[in-house]
Image 1: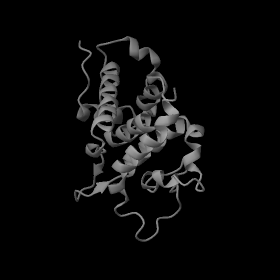
Image 2: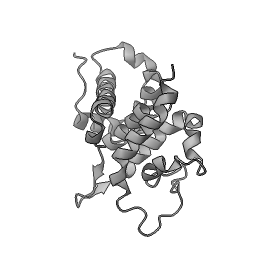
Image 3: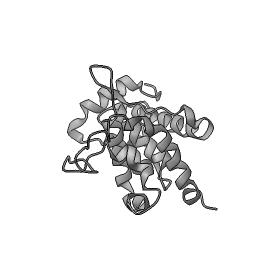
Image 4: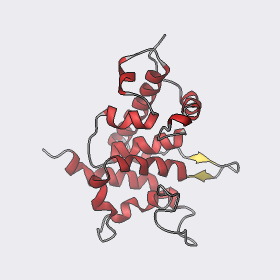
Length: 189
């Protein structure tokens, strides 16, 4: 047995097979959005606090190399570190792993739903940017436009003509802007 990271295509199948355990992510796109929010968000978190719900695993899985759970943890850690390194060294090269529909068009909803799910872990820390009166509230708009609440309703209300079609194109810059916005708070000396 090995503790190597699970390849992403295998990880997606593994997540889908665990749907009855209710992992936060049921696709690589959701996992990627979730990891991006952890990297760019307002607080540092213990990996146990965010990886366990993401994968629907027990904390004890971190102690047992050579298992599928540990291989999944390793894959998540690698993607998290890849996002962090890209945003730190070449933020203009950050690309979300969006799902594509049958026509090849980008479907940003799963990625954005993953990002929003990670926000839910520390929603009070994200509160300043959820206030529409905050001048920086717009940093979240490209993501929130494609997110739904726990009742499956659009977070920002019904889509309006012209508001959504290419909002996903602003997501990479929004993630870096969010990381820059939170950096003084997250890494206060």
